[in-house]
Length: 525
Ligand code: MSP
Image 1: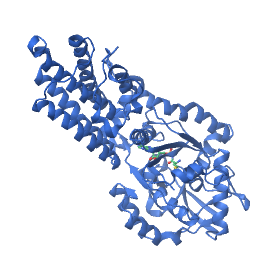
Image 2: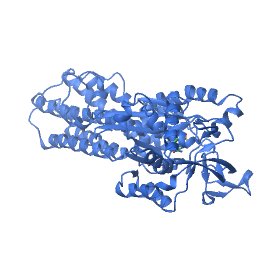
Image 3: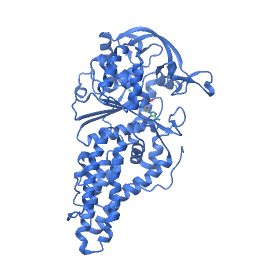
């Protein structure tokens, strides 16, 4: 299995019953930023994403639209879920669909193994089922309905009535793993993060685990249970296995699995339980290593509530990227929201940050430095003379920012990493204001000092560009064409960003990195 230098990271696989909203895009972007950062520090990196296509929820949506579930899934994957990756600029290494043959093959092998080893048995079950969650609910998970659902018990997450299901089906002996899971959480505190999610899961498991019903016979849209063709597999058991089937588990070629597993899972906190309880128990039963980490991020809230399509608060990612671009989308959500906590989205906030932090903060800094090198040195980058304390402070800050940002990413704190990088942006803006290169330029005797100031600023700018490139690949690539020494900025090492010394020339930027936005469409404001 992999050593410390591999970084395999996954997003949840998304239900194809509907089109993506910015909550889904947030998960994708967070995982992508972490993956790009690790790739740019030389780790053997793999980003997996995909779609969850079986189960009752998809079946019902397809029936309502008078198509087969596979036709529905094909349409949504082609028209909505794969295009989302372009919209928010995600560089995934693989895209798995639970209807892929490779997935179905791996799932079948896994199930058969658990059955043969005695971890699956036949039994009876009755309970409250929420189709929105695709999960049986405990009475404590339910609340009283309002409006059209007055007098009924509804799911607290989806606000829709639960259904009473009674089935004879197959069960996974999850209760066998209660103590082993608690030992895992205890011995590896990093396994579930952040602590709020970890504590919730530990107390859930301490209440006692019941065996899990893993098959359904009332519909057939799923993977057939290998030893009983009247049953299909429970959609979550099917979906969780994507993380290993995508790497070749259960196939003739499992090189990627050997090299990259175990992975890190980025998930919304609402589905952390599936990933931190059911999934490791499944892996333990199969004798496979558990994930490296399950990180449960918070929810995007609109007007204080979890944004969702079913509650009509869904915002399409393109509504934001059409105005601000994908870089600003990525920057905004990762900077404004502490990763692991809920965060409120507002058009006012994204507009304000775009203007002050991106256009005025970073964009102007880049334009000014490149323009002055062209105005005063014809774009030929000069050598630095003796350094003053102010120059040395910028060099030292570039080094410390690089190290601290790298450490924040290692701790899954992209918001901290970005805030740290902005210390350098702000310091460079302050440095230029104080050093007044335009005044130095008026005095021929200050030529060497002018060169030192501009090159110190340029070096700092290059460090910022490399460090922020995993977050804003497009703007930084454009800047790199101006100040870089060729190649793509994606090839630059983030962990050595401070060492960058500048190229021989600085070519004028064709246009600003963050164009002025005249008027913001406040579609959902
Ligand atoms: N198909 C399952 C996951 C299976 S993984 C083996 C699923 N799909 S989902 O499409 O409903 O949700 C996918 C992800 O989007 C989840 O991590 C969920 O938390 C996230 N989000 C959905 N709405 C969200 C917000 N409003 N805010 C942030 N993330 C949100 O669950």
